[in-house]
Every structure is written in structure tokens, then in C-alpha cells.
Image (cartoon, rainbow, N blue to C red):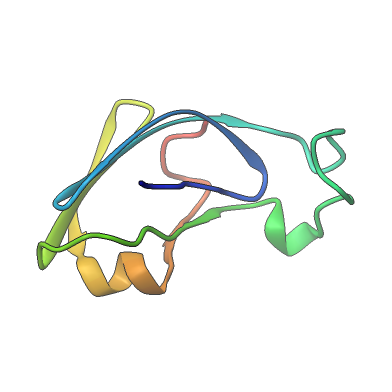
Length: 89
């Protein structure tokens, strides 16, 4: 199975395959009750996406219907930084 988690966001939909990650996200405020503790300033800007179980060398990433393009699988395994300027959940 696959699991997806992101600080500062609620994942409302996820499809992960060996060559693709499609996410639907809802951004939560830094003091949202869902957080165990308020997010620090550094955590409340962009998001970091990590996904395992990807076998293709290039992975297409889509967030809230916006295609972010193909990225190196190793970048997604290590943690792909998605700045706030990209499609906001």
C-alpha cells in the first residue's frame, strides 16, 4: 500500500503509481486543531513531498490538478520541495 502525509495540509485525494503522484490537498493554517502543535514559520510556507515505492526514474507530479511536470524519482524519495508559489492547496 501507499501512504501520503504532508505537514500543513490535509490530503483529500491521492493516487500513487510507480511513475506518477497525483494529490488533492487542502492547506491548513499553522494553528489548525489537526496539528498536534502549531507549525513553525519555516513549516508553514511550502510543502515537502516524499513518496516511496516509485520504480520509474522520472515521476510526474500533479497537485490539485496542476501538472508540476516530471521530476527525478530520487528527488521525490529524498523530499521534493514545493514552494508556496506553486498551486496552493
